[in-house]
Length: 261
Image (cartoon, rainbow, N blue to C red):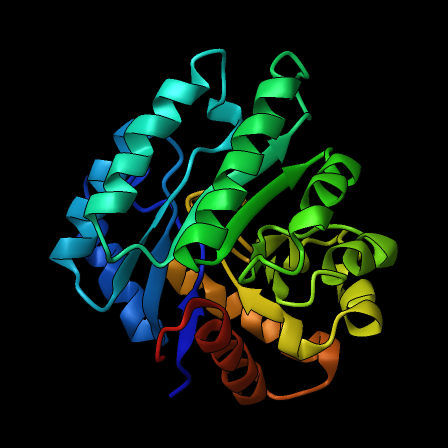
């Protein structure tokens, strides 16, 4: 049986409040034995830690302030969140952090400052980054470049771009791309882009549950078991077996997150 890792799942949200145990069981039965949970704000930190204690060695917590959660009060929020980082030693990454200018640039300055602060957390702790980037690639690359040699690595989550965008991210040699359900969408160009621009040793699998469910579940609530559909499509795109996808992506997870899978 294949063994896969879902490196990005928001299993603490309301969508899973009634049946989380079944969701975790279905993931295990599908061969998805580990799921990584990103924090997005203050309130989600505690909910994620609670879930991860209920499912040790299955659910793993990350700590970060999502760019859409950044506002004029971000410094106080980060100060509070960093206190968790100092007291809890079981976080596996700094995330979900990054830049998002899709809807608005109202807090552009604050987003840039918050992201840079969390880059420094990554360097201080040696924890990898789980990065969200939406309509902000140029700003992100410019901000990260001065820290490139110090950063321990991480994942550019939910990659949906073209070859040039892939190359721009992969210039950060310790980073990989998170590939999810978009790969399976009918109009996605990823099946052509990825084999041309991205070696398999620079990819990890993810769902971003409960969002962006892959075909044939599109339009439904996404869950970690569905990462198998992503792995299957990735295998088709690269012309390899799903066993090879599992082997290589698990190796990538071990390298980035320092977790044995």
